[in-house]
Image (cartoon, rainbow, N blue to C red; front, side, top):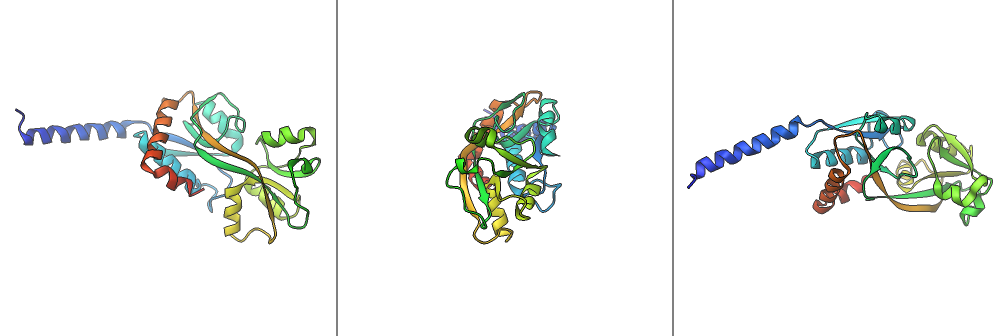
Length: 238
C-alpha cells in the first residue's frame, strides 16, 4: 500500500506538471476593436472585453494577449491567423471565413434621437433620413426594413459617430444600449433624448479557423463561466 507521504509527493508532482503544461501553451490572442468608445485610453480594451478575454483564457488554460485592431482589419486578422478569438458579434455583422460559438452575450441595438425632433414611432418613419452609422458595419434589421431608403452617414468608428450626432450633424444615431448607458453616466447626452429599440439579440464569438483553439473548446469555456457565475459578473461591465 502506498504511503501517505509518497502519495502526497506524487500528487504535488502531478500538479506541477499540469501547471507547467498550461504555462507552455500559446496565449489566447483575443481580438478587440479599438475606437476609444468605452475606454478612456483608445489603446486599451474596455473593462468588459478585458475581463471576457482573461476569463476565457483562464478556462482554456492559457495566458491572454489582446490584439487591438481597427474594425476594418479585424476579419483579415482572424482569417489570416493573426488572432484566435473575437467576441460580441454576429455573422451578419462581421461576415468572414471563421467559425462561431453559441450565442451568449446579450446586445440591444437601439436608435438614439435628438430631443429637437419628433421621435420615430416605427422604423418606417426613418425612410430617407440620415442615420449615424459606422463604416463597414452592417445593420441587417434596418437594411431589411428600409431598403434603398436606408440613408447611412458613416463615421470611421463608434466614438466619432457619437460625436457627429452630438454636434448636430444628424438627428438619429444607431448604437447599442450599453453605449447610451455609458454616455448618460458621463453626462454627454442632452436632456430629453429618445431611445427606440431596434434589435435584441445574443451575440457570439468568432473563432479563427487557423487557430489551434477549437469552437468546442471555447463553448466549453463559456459553459464553465456560466456555471461558476463569472459570466454574469462580466456581462454587468458592458
